[in-house]
Length: 275
Image (cartoon, rainbow, N blue to C red; front, side, top):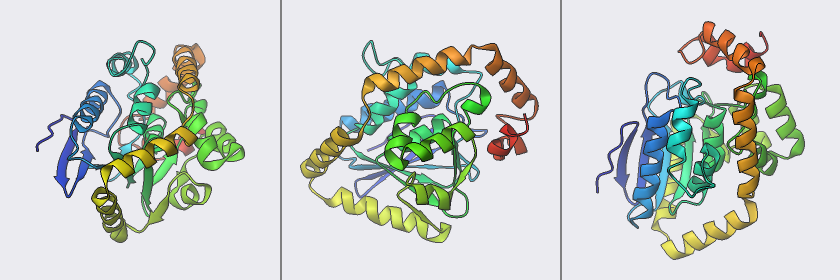
């Protein structure tokens, strides 16, 4: 069975769909990626052949660094096509990812910040490269607010105090710290990571689908935030993104190389502290 997308390269083996994010130059979340994510969710919902989806990146530096800040209206419009009349945000699309028919695993080998890290939290499990994984929530430092589920998800994964520190400081979190506070399931060296995730994914894919789906559904019922809370956060993000204090800070970051393979993008947490 073939799955073809413009920003995702896929390979299906033993019930596991390996979905490699490939959206040059640095895997920004834009309308093309959002459209492909919707298509992948549609395709895997329609077939029982895909039991597990493993997301990874073709870029060694970036998993999903954040949204394309020049394309907010465009990717939001595409995200709005995924659900009902009230599900018109990236956060609503990520909720659909959490509730997807297959089990979803994020394999983090680079940087995931902002809506990129919120994508991680929406997946069922997260495994990170000891050498290269970085997670961050830079929104507050740019004058906006995490609008796709970070508030609820980090509180549930790591607790109130850690959520305060991660979100309010905008600092980058390395792999060891991410594992310590619960943002990822486990951190492994590069030479062990792929084999570990492959074995786990194929093990889950081999179990009876009905039991796996029911277990996932009941875990989600106990753990996922209310849809209404994510809708509120999306609205706050959209409001602050239009505020002058945010647009001026983003403009300064753009001048310093944001959304390019630059020090500002590679060391975003440090760059925020220099504004």
